[in-house]
Amino acid sequence: KSELELFALRNGQFVYSREVPKNDTQGWGDLLFGEINEAAARLRLGPDGVLEKILLTGESSRDVYEEIRERIPECELLEKSFPLASSEINSQVMAEATAVCGLAFTAVAPNPAVKLNLLPPELKSRQGRWGIAVAAALGMAILLILAGLGLVEPMHNRQRLALLEQETQKLEGQVRAVRSLEARGEKLEAQRKLIVDLLGDDDRNLDILKYLTETFPDDTFLRSYSYNKGVITLQGESDSSSDLISQLGKSPLLKDVVPRGSSSRTATGRESFTIEARLR
Image (tube, rainbow, N blue to C red; front, side):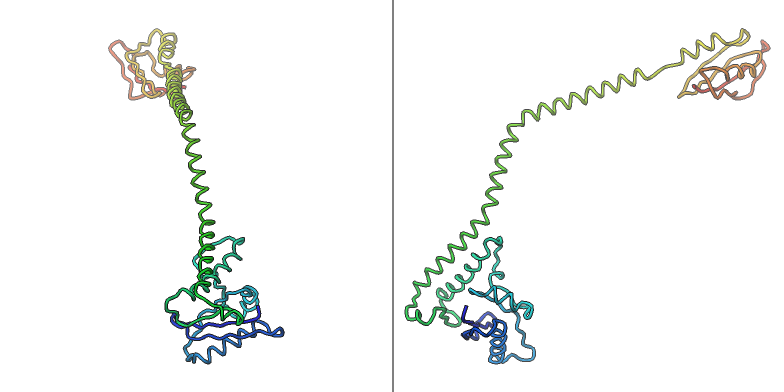
């Protein structure tokens, strides 16, 4: 909260380090800008030199980030660079874990690029590898807790799936009974349709023959009668085929009565006829 420590890395190696105190009248943004310019000058960045990214961590990192993120778009929090996902409620724990991991790395790395000492001046004489190793263990514990939080939901999902499978097995017998009833219902429906088709197939040939027998004149004789898809063909002899066609056209059973072919006189003196008609 009262000090800024800037580290510069080039190709993954530490190349610059500087500690700067912050006074009460100076803002974090102005202090950070000044230190960035100082570091760039000392690193001797060429015309093509680019500052790729600025990562913030520490107690005041979020406040600094909110103050300078619009002025420096390349600035972000170090905790966001870790390949871990956490809910908003764990954001503070994640920030602390990030700082602890960074501190622990400096102590356990066998050949660090630059030696760091993040302890306050009054405690630097007490620094020891074992003391920081405790911080490393704490950091690992925090990471394990975060990983455990991430595994809770999948475990709950597996439990729900197992419970669902148990309930499904309990209902399996009822499902089979329902499917059997469905199959039986489909069979009965097919039988019903067959019966309806049989009852609906109203054969009217007998009615037509009865009508012809009762209405034909005594001078008219029928040699053949055929029925095909609603079309009736009559062949026979009559004294007047035209009178017969007119009479059939008034029938309540027939319509579209027309002659087919030419009529001719037979040895008996009657006209032979071929007449077609349709059922009404």
